[in-house]
Figure 1: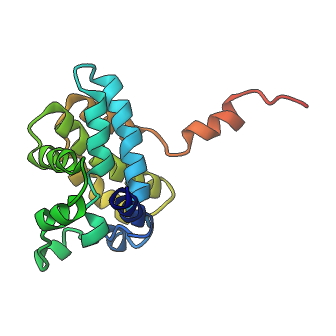
Figure 2: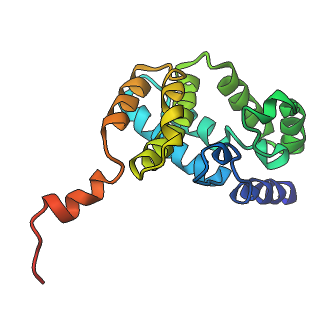
Length: 189
């Protein structure tokens, strides 16, 4: 049980590991744990739009897709030009002594190979989480995110992911809560 407790402490470290790509946008910030939560919400939604997908496997894959970053940190595309992380070693060390370690390894292998519908949906959820952030920042008046959104959209692989990205592009980030105040009649109390 001690090894499981250590694993849980390590996974919680992702709350303090910050995603590094935001430095190129000039604004915004996010921990890996915050990113994972967003990816999970998107994946759950994509599972509803793709009934043939195994929802449990998809969600498990999204939950652990960035787990190695607890040991490696978050390397953005610029950093990866100069630094090579050994994800296989990080995963081997991270899962050592865990009865469910092989499950984590199998899910990460599936995610990285991107061959199954679940892996493709998980990768789309990962990209859509960033796209939502970019759209929110652009809607708030920041110009740099607009340069990136088109590149993110080209990485999408599933019909549900592509369709959702199109909806994100035309939906204002604050439309959901503006409807509460503008579109709904106010109730007197």
